[in-house]
Length: 149
Image 1 (cartoon, rainbow, N blue to C red):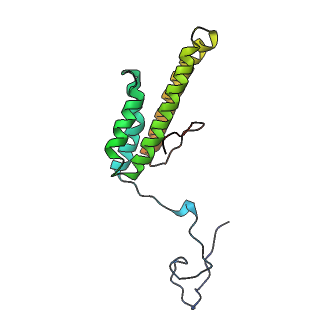
Image 2 (image 1 turned 120 degrees about the vertical axis):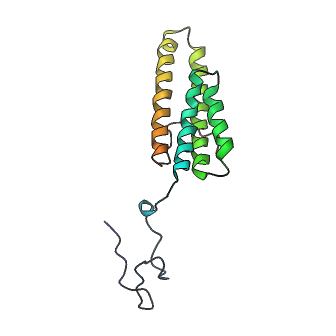
Image 3 (image 1 turned 90 degrees about the horizontal axis):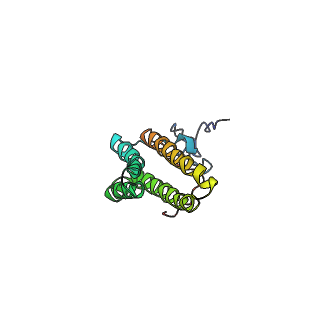
């Protein structure tokens, strides 16, 4: 079902845009119609905010340090990177907390099973979020605590 604007506003003039006509009964445009134009720079840095977490596979705590560096460098000049940097950082903090729990349970069978599952899950979700950020999508990781807002 789509919204069809009235043929004219209250004064009888139709401008073609019901929101610019002064019609008090014309609501805001639906969210799906809002087009956020992101530059290539926005999308690149948003993607790097997620991919920088992969440094954690090489550098201890790099999964948290990488997103922090990207976020701090670009948060004031690129709002998309501010959002995606916080999202990446929140996810990596959650992964770090989960890794601590898995580390504590490594002496049991469940810890041995969960360790590789956590590593694969973190890798897949990080790459997926990076692809979405590169497409200009404001991505949200599912089921995480958002400690940084």
